[in-house]
Length: 459
Image (cartoon, rainbow, N blue to C red; front, side, top):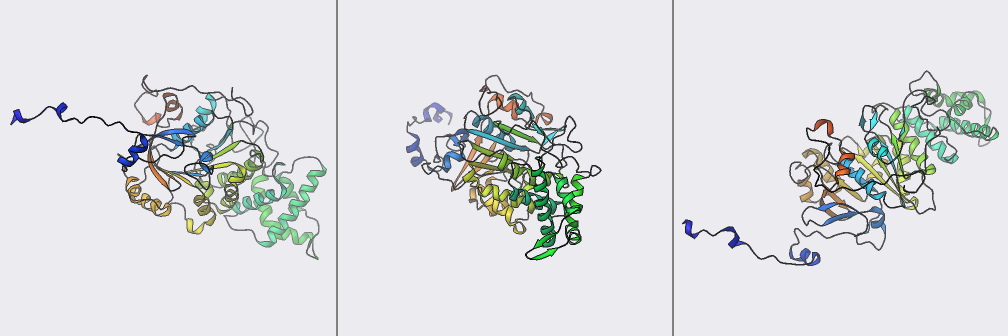
């Protein structure tokens, strides 16, 4: 029997040389079709081995191979499987193009420092850190929801959203909205006369000491306006009274030193509590503030807004309403919105039409490993194929760390994310749980980083 066995070399088949185009036809199960060669490399398509290239602005172009209806992206999956690494390497690679600009709302980190702190330091960027307390202190930053850069009609929308959040999400009554509107007009007029920025304390003062107004042709007395506006005044007191917990975050002019011309802006939100009202309040302010302060209609800059822990937006209807408007007009503004979540199960989308609208406006979905029950919910909501539905719960093989299912328009691929040694060092968030050295082997590819200088240039 042994004499009949042949050595392995005798059973090998001669290699067949072919182009990638023909390979797709010869092996349709493994030769995934490419999208567009323009953009940045994410990694490799797991089954074909081809480079996987992605750029939402390129794919929005009618001339692209895969035409996307929007540039918005949903990134979903359990912790430790590569969401943060993907976002960071994508930003680092895109920053090499001079017409790209990024704003990151960094809500994760440790020891009071966000996950993007290392990258910001490496690029010469100082994160904007928001903390409780006195904004005039050394580490305090204040963002004025009534900043002059925000048009007056949008200032009122922000005010309403903030008061609804402070009121437990309940909408303001029509009488309270009327009193607030009159107070806003009065305070804005006084601020213009005094040639100073409008702040929340001005609104509170106008609510508690109103002047007579007209509702159509019906006069409304100051006493009536005080009564109608009392719920709004009590809510604003939480933000303006120095003895309150939320004091210092929003009442006053926007702090100096926030460079809205920087190629990368990082808002470090890690010192704000995950629970409570501070985070949704900040999101309600920051959406319009970014739209009118950071985005400049008419220029040729392509901007990307990345929101970590995006459930702070999706789970609060007043915040979701503001961001839905921002996302809906993304095409006109040259904006790509990235929502980063752990899972969808905590979001009651049937009761939050604004949140559902934001998710439906995402034309690209990047899905990392999920538990089986969560994978079923996600697959049903996003309409995934059978193989993708089965792959998501397989966190040891198909959707192992660093691998994700990319649903880009109508195409679905399994993509393996590839990082250089420098990117691994800057994006690794598992250092404390790992026994390995922080740096990769000397043989791993490296790439230099370009430091950013103030404004839109690269230094």
